[in-house]
Length: 256
Image 1 (cartoon, rainbow, N blue to C red):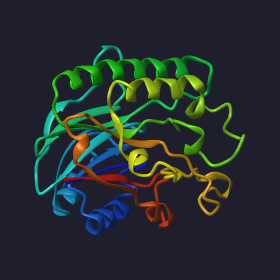
Image 2: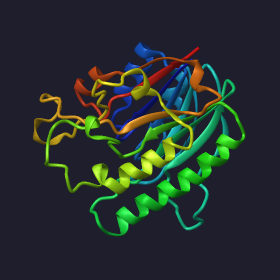
Image 3: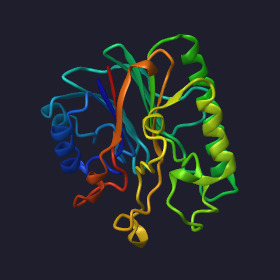
């Protein structure tokens, strides 16, 4: 079972890129982020034609998350992260596919920091940790997939000081990610690639893709009920180099 997470950065603009990748990579489940489309604008007909069922929660202009399943219909279990009734951002969706609960989460960027946006990021992390803890107690196979907007350690960003004030690398951001993992989750990519950069994001600015000036922001965290099934993990980094590409590349795992 191949499960991927991909910040598509506008699903309609990148639809040809997405469809080419689906055809070539054949993931069984895909968590998409940054749809940047309303529910009505989501390209479900093209995705169905490619052999995928889908559940999604769109939002005009920004955000938006979806879960695709190959030759199957995901069973929707949740369309929002609990804990704040006033949070209307489309940043979390959760579905069951072939006996595994999979999320697509798009954690707040948090910039500029300090400030309200960074506070929102840390609060969202707290809510995610609370919900994740409840999922762990159920002792079921869960994959927390998505764009966490955190480079967890110094090895998850190219050597630079230019990001030092960015919310993606702040000690509080990294501590929040570590606290989540320390609940008992397995960071799949880092577990199988302990010493490689495994970048998933290269900003459009300053020639960062040709320079391989990347960050690892997209993660797949596995619950103890599914972690022993992990046999492969990688990043389809070449997708970032295509014409019209998202600034992210798909990260994926294979479960036995």
